[in-house]
Length: 295
Image 1: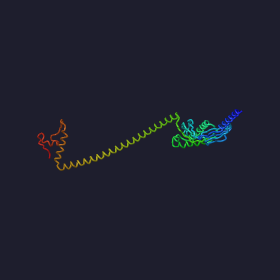
Image 2: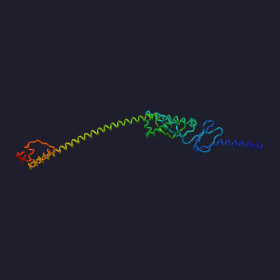
Image 3: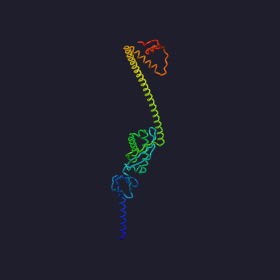
């Protein structure tokens, strides 16, 4: 009989141990717990520590309290300037309302699927109103803030709070990139042709101005040279005149010597002149004529 009592006591102890073990659970500081009773949520526990629930009747669902990362697939978006870009974004979020989260999506896997659609819709809504230049400029921060606000408005209905939305990359599709590169190359070639044409025109203007200035300078120089030459000839004439006035006979003789030098320079010079010509007046008498040089 005592053996049966021990057996029963052992069974009771084991049952009590099972009940106690099934009734107590620990809430970690990185988690928040939703207590369900027959599948219906009855309370939310966010405070870490040892907690109690009714065994077999109640069960718990654990959710993260920490910020979670979500990397949705890259999406192709059309901007307001009709350019297509492939946007690669990532989202940081946390479960702000476990009860609403359980009632709408229940699991993180379903939540990520719903969140992907929300992010995709927000990207198209915001980026559809901006240009490519805005996405690549300092306006990018404001664009990401607008996307975050738009995603938060939809994610709040899922019990999710969006902490941050970032555009990791915004690239052109390969086919669009090639077309844009070709257009950019054509535009640069057109600008180069215009620059060369403008440079040629400017060069022509500079050369024409230089030629005109050269002509003016040469004309001025020639004018100055002619004036100087005329003044020199005038002074030379005055000097010759003064010299002639001081000693007319010597001056006549000197001029005749210069004429002889010029006329008789070559070895084979032949001159046919009358012996009485004034050209030979300083050569003495010719042919016995008895003519003498004139004084």
